[in-house]
Image 1 (spheres, one colour):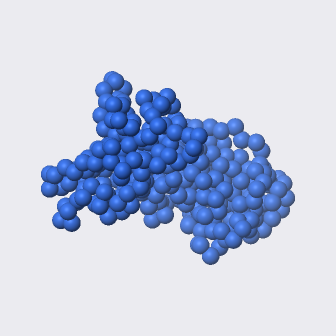
Image 2: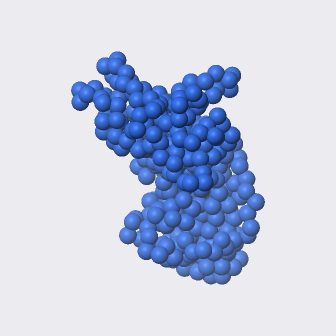
Image 3: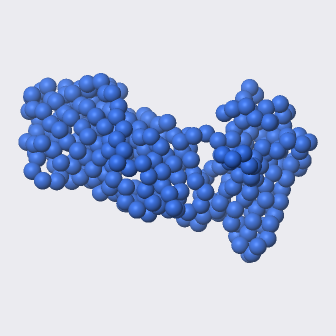
Length: 333
């Protein structure tokens, strides 16, 4: 079990009363740590425990505890998560539920809780956008008593998705009397180290670190529009002095056929995204780009990046120094 800690400033938040933990308009809220394993097998249940303290400074009524967490979309976490908590002022295990979309946060500018968190925090320190915030509130509504001190452990049990991946998960703490204000006295957010899902489908999707290659969407069919990027700004590389960058790819189909488009073709010329940067992108329809017949389905694309005359080729480099093409696998979801 791995525990990651964050030094948290005391936060003014709401806390719970007689049966649970919740906050109020002027309370001190602490997110002391989140307990978690460092990895889990694809399709297994991962457990994350948020350890919190609440110290209300006033009496308040009709408040609920709010927690959210940031996870890969492929987990379908809204339909695959159970959230419960225990506290020093409650008897037994208490439950939490998804906040209904019609219950908007007080300071969310008309957005739902989920959209408000995405707007406020994005995907945190992750480098891919294919993640979402899932938000819960306590099923019980509380009255808060000044001076009451609470300790609670909120447990999120989630069935992970099928993909092999690495991601920094996010954890958020708030209360309904505040509702996503800009005051860090009333809400707290923290992120895990890289959490890994292993023994799943496809190549590892890395949300944690930038690589020279990037592809969106993360999962696609031959009929989807695909964008592949060369992210040359992340470090020195053999294409630093290239005036143009070309895509070189081979699409492999279930019929055992291979279709190649490689450099020196106008359609393989990648678009420079910024005059002063070194990031290039290519957006295309795979079936049309590679000329895949209608009766064939793409399994994967192996690809690399070339300079203008094809004399330099950038591929992925393994720890032992060997080079091989980048791989984009087509997984039907």
